[in-house]
Image (cartoon, rainbow, N blue to C red):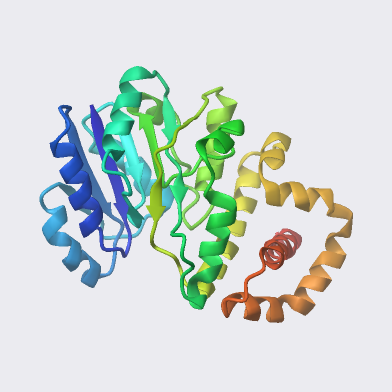
Amino acid sequence: MISVCIPIYNFNVTKLVKELSRQSSILNVSSEIILIDDCSKSSIKKVNESICSNEVYIKLDKNIGRAAIRNKFLNYAKYENLLFLDCDVIINSKSFLKTYIDIIKANNAQIMCGGRTYKAIPPKRDRLLRWKYGVSRESKSHEIRGKSPNKSFMTNNFVITKSTFQQIKFDERLNQYGHEDTLFGFELKKRNIKILHIDNTVLSDGLECNNSYISSTESAVDNLIKILRFINYDKKFIEDVRLLRIYYKYFRLRRLIVVSFIIFKPIIKYFLSKGYVSLYLFEFYKLGTLCVKMKCA
């Protein structure tokens, strides 16, 4: 019936696996939990060993990245429905698995997304950037996500049929952080595969520190430029990605944006890294990064 697929990278999954195991044990359906560790630190692997060894557990000797590791689950999953969860999520509903199972039985959707939420109480200032961005841009109701279903696709909590996933895999040329989900959602859209958005959220728990998230954002911009080349600057993709829409809207001003960004980048980065978060400044930081990198590409 369902294979729960959890890629692990440097995170303690004990609570997550325990809760999933508890929920699956009370459901009258065939299920399994598969965990693939993407070459985490030895200390993390040691912590996870006891809980993971009771499930299907694979440890990779080399880090292969967020896209390739998800594709790898096809080699191990027994069942037709694959539930992908990020390793840093918290299951905040006692009927989380049952909700997915009930909808799978009642609906023939090829892919569905459950959504994500964040803790209501802000974290300490050194992790405020990721939290504030997540709350503002990612934590949306299923009704809102459903208005732009493919643009709203996220990899942290989704179900896909094995047959669909075998046709459309994550692009393994994207071997660093960022936008592998954006491209995947776009490829689904090109094939007229609509994503069903449902109210079955998980709580995001693994907030990066501000400096780490800024670095991840810069990496995501690199991936976005790679994708543009892969798809030959497809106008429909550009229209789907907010950062690219803004870039091309102000294309004639890109030199001014680059000069302004180079001048103000140190102070913007300082304020963001210290947790004095303005999402407008963060969006300008992303736009400036894109303009500089596109100029150099």
